[in-house]
Image 1 (cartoon, helix red, strand yellow):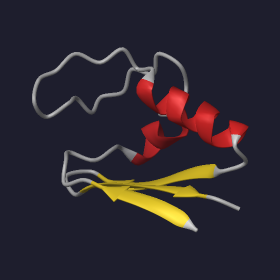
Image 2 (cartoon, one colour):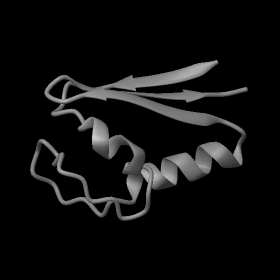
Image 3 (cartoon, one colour):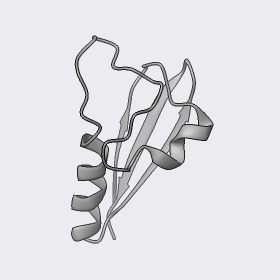
Length: 73
């Protein structure tokens, strides 16, 4: 079973994808509504998913949005 969340935001640069699950990640993509970001959200998602035996994957293309998938075993 999997949960998929997609957005139509600015996307994430390919060279930044390896860092998005790191604590306090500061990447060039900015929130579209101008809200502040601590860089903790995705690191928390990944940690919680791993604690229950799930895996988080992301695919993204700049200017086309991102797709996040949490796969449960």
